[in-house]
Image (cartoon, rainbow, N blue to C red; front, side, top):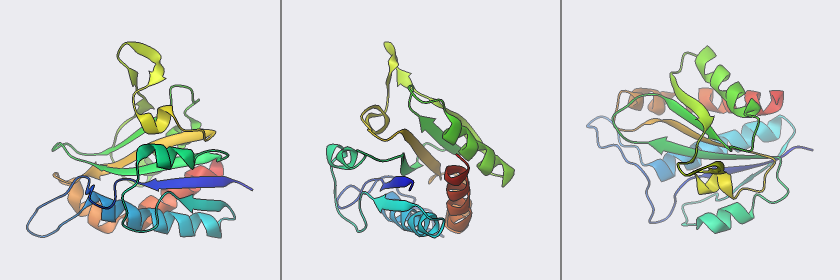
Length: 177
């Protein structure tokens, strides 16, 4: 049976990125927890074993999260972004073939989402070392980091309404891979 670990980023005192637009308030730690719980339910219904690094609003260290990746087939780390840009960003390990990440990209694009980038990101001085510790030190067979959009841009309207679509896309991509 496929074993999946979903990481809702941040938690506890670590709020992550936040929007302060008049009509909406998004706090990354809460948003990605809610999204991760929806993905967990969807993937369970698809017949997989799914675990969350956290299932409530608690702080967790990166090493604690990574320790849970042992014996996992897939590790998905959910995030939001900030920087007044637009679009979804998908990163995968430099040691991966990128199949899952590219299926995610295709799924998002087919549903009309802008995908800014989908690639492995290495350290500037070492092309064989992952830039992101969550990808570098994951023990899962396949690890992907998804940044669903920018909380300080026009992405905010999509973030407010598309959690179910994001869940469907992630579930479909994992099941097809």
